Structures are given as C-alpha cells and as structure tokens.
Length: 224
Image 1 (cartoon, rainbow, N blue to C red):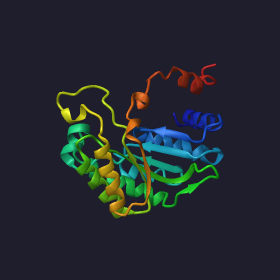
Image 2: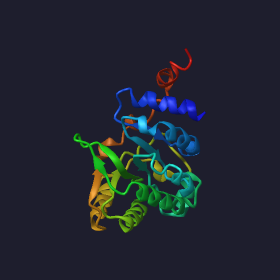
Image 3: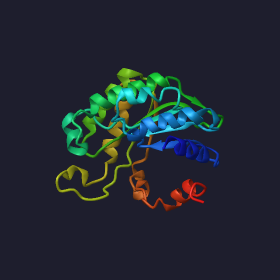
Image 4: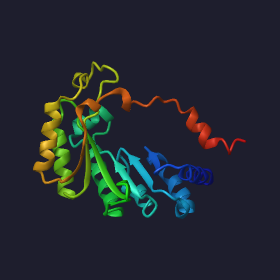
C-alpha cells in the first residue's frame, strides 16, 4: 500500500538517520514511486536507491526526480559468468542501460559539509576471485561512460558457503588480484574511486537476518 509506505518513509526519515536507504527495491519500484510522489518534499534527508542494477529503464524513469542518490552494483560483463552466478546471461545489457539512466537523472555529485553524498551516483563493483579480467571489462565500460563517475571497487568477497559447482568461489580474493584491478582502474582514466583493504573480507558484511527490531520500529505505531 503506497499510503502506508509513504508514512513509513517519513517515520524513518525523521528518526535521525543520514538517509532513507531502499535496498534491492526494484520489484516494488511502482509502489515506491507513488509513495515518494506524496512525501518526497517532506523528507529532511536524501533517498538512496540501493540496487543490483538488473532492472528496466522504464521502471527507473518513473523514479526521476524522486531519488537523490543511486547506489547501483555493476557485477559482470561476461554473459556466461552472469548466467552461472545470477542466472542472468543478459545482466550486462540490462545493467549498463540502467546505470546510464541513473547517471542521466543524477549527473552531478553533491556532498554536505561532512562529506556525505546528498545527490549523485556511486557505482559499486565487487572483485570476485579468479575473475579479474571481467572486473577490468567492467571498468572499461564505466570509463567509457564517464571517467569522472564515483566508483567503489570492493574487495570484501568472502566464502559464506563452499560451492562444489563453482570452486573459484571457495577462497578469498588475493591482494595481488585486488591490486591488479585497482591499478587498472587508474590506467583506464577513472579518477574518483573508493578502495578497500582486502582484510575487509569478513563475515561482518553478512546480514544477521534478524529483522524483528526493524519491524518493531517501522510498524510500532501502525499496529497500536
């Protein structure tokens, strides 16, 4: 219900947070667009759209003027790799168009006095063990679009569960692999990057999936 979502968006925005972060929201993008149309002008903090980029330009166009910060992943170029790991051989074709639409909507990055992004796009790419050549192709594409874009090159991959079907996923990324991709980042002319230490590849990034406290916060007043 878009009215209920509009209420929840306001509740979160006024709770002292830096932003309202919509995570993997594309399957509800139509409801989100309707809800934000009602309350966006009342929200005191930016709205962040945190997505895997596997979504249509049409759905994103409905959010034009409603999203302040786009935070898309850009996972793969190689179609066989994206089919293996995500069941989406057309990932690059879909995601490349989606990211370009996000950049069209928010072409200029603006920050507050504390350095927190208020408007713009940060593209994230997770380097996968054994797949540095595909990471380079990702960076080739991003550089061809805009060498000034903000890009986060992530090293935080860790083994959550051993996989006999894809043995290359059964280890952490090496420092040499990550450095190779970071060097390539600069070699293709990209200049605005966020880098990680490979020691960040820990289970700290694995959600606990214990959402009861979140539900209590969001629905407390509704269910009184």
